Image (tube, rainbow, N blue to C red; front, side):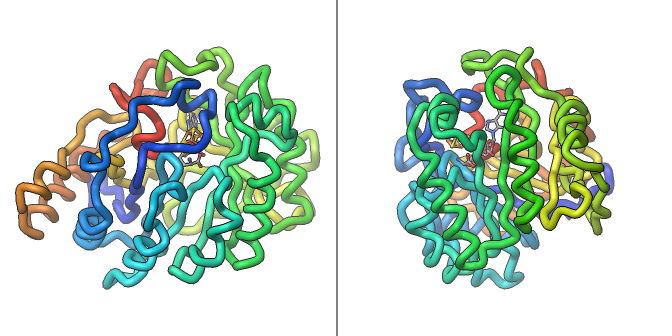
Amino acid sequence: MRDSFARKIDYLRISVTDRCNLRCRYCMPEEGVPALRHRDILSYEELLRVAVDAGVCKIRITGGEPLVRKGIVDFIAGLARLPRAPEITLTTNGLLLAEQAVSLKEAGLSRINVSLDSLDAARYRQVTRRDGLAQVLEGLEAAVAVGLTPLKINMVPILGVNEDEIAAFGRLTIERPWQVRFIEFMPVSSDLDYSPGQLYPAARIKADLQQLAPLEKVPQKGILGPARIYRLQGAVGTLGIISAVTESFCRECNRLRLTADGQLRPCLLSQNEIDLRTLLRAGIDDKVLAKLLQTSVTAKPERHCGGIGCGIGQRRMQEIGG
Ligand code: SAM
Ligand code: SF4
C-alpha cells in the first residue's frame, strides 16, 4: 500500500493488550489505568484477519506487555503461517522472556526488542515501580540462546533519572552483537511522573556516545525506519537513536498501527482512527476491510506535529503500543 506522500506502508504494529506487569513512570501512573474489558480487545482470530488483509511484510507485536496475554505463542504461530510469511517481531519488557523464549522462537518469532532503562536494580525499580532487573537480564540471555537475534534493547533516557547510563548502555555493544536503541522520551500525557523538561534530546545522546569512541554512521538499506544507526569504532554491535520529538523521522515512516481495542491508527500521534472492531463484528467482508486499510494508509499525515503538545488523545502509550 502507498500513502498520499508515496511512502510504502508495509509494516503493521499490533498492540495485543493494554495490560502490563510494570508501571514505567514515563508510560503510566502507579495505579495503572482502567483495563479494557476482555470483550473489547480484539480476539486473535480478528487480529489474524486484519493481518492477512493488510498484506504487510513485517508485523510487530507490542502492548501493554504482549507476553502477559494468554495464547500469544499460538497467535505468533498463526501469523507465521500467513500467506506472505511476514517477518514477526515483538517488543517486550522482558520480565517473562526467559520462560517463553524457546516457544516464541519455535512459533516463528524472528527477533525481539527488550525495553530496559537501567542496569542498576534499585534504579530499575525506581523507573518501573517494580523489581525485575535480574529477570530481564535472564530474558536477554535466553533470547540470545534461542536465536531471537539480532537482539535490540530499547532505552529511554530521562534527564535526572537515567541519562547518566547512556555510556554504560553504549558499552554493551562493544563486545555484543546487539543493537542498543536510545528513544527520546515523548511527554505525551500530562499525568506521567516525568515532565517535558526531562526530555533528553537525540543530539545530547549522540554527544554522550561520542565520548566513548568515535561514532561511525552505519549505512541503512531500503526504508530507513525511525532509528539512525551508528557504531562505536571497533564495536561488534550497533547503536540506534530514535528522535520522535526533536528530529522527526516521518519521511521514512512505513507503518500502520492497530490498538488493543481494534482501532486502526495511521500514526502514533494521530487520532484519526478507524473503528475496525465494530466493523469486524458487524461482519464486513475482506474487500471492505482491505479498502479500510487503504483508507487509513491514505490518512497518514505527512508528519506529526512534533511530539510535545501533539499528544495521543485520550489514549495511553500501552494501548497503542509505543
Ligand atoms: N511493554 C512493552 C515494552 O515496554 O517493551 C511493549 C510496549 S511499550 C509501550 C513499547 C515501547 O514504548 C517501549 O520501548 C517503551 O520504552 C516505549 N515508551 C513507552 N512510553 C514512552 C514515552 N513516553 N516516550 C518514549 N517511549 C516510550
Ligand atoms: Fe508496561 Fe511497556 Fe509501558 Fe513499561 S513501557 S509500563 S513495560 S507497557
